[in-house]
Figure 1 (tube, rainbow, N blue to C red):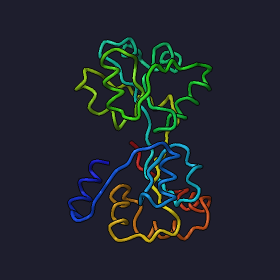
Figure 2: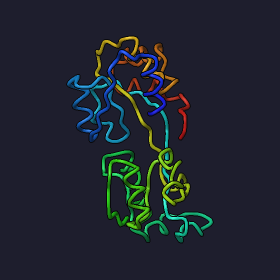
Figure 3: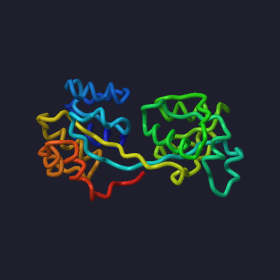
Length: 217
């Protein structure tokens, strides 16, 4: 998101850009009521059935631990090993949390979640003071060394998540709005967005992108 915002502001300095964070339900309601132009979400996409939601990218998770943590000594992480430790992760309903819970449930394990937050930086801070191990989006784990932490690849443990961007059906999209979408997800060109708008149902939109290979982070 930061590169997208930077490029957009440089291109459209006269446009006021405001970001609002909320639960999937709050975000879907804001978009449906035209309180915001776009909704960007990963979780509870069934709440967005009255919006045109288009896939942007796939992503997965990393486990963030102190440098001397026992998990760093393992040749391969397992859910069983991860479940031995207190976990600091996202609030349920944020950033693919349901896939995380599903993975533990499928392995017959109960995660010991001791603290939740909506922001990865907050999670990393609490991991650094010893509250537990962190499970965050891999794209948010690139700078963990600054906190004296290391990021362990956990892609094999969890199903990948898809982040989508959308807007209320029937919205008149201005030129700068098309550009914002394409800056955020380059495969969502104006033509592709118009094709998605022409779909009459979420199922048709899904079918439109069925064979599209999304970027992976």
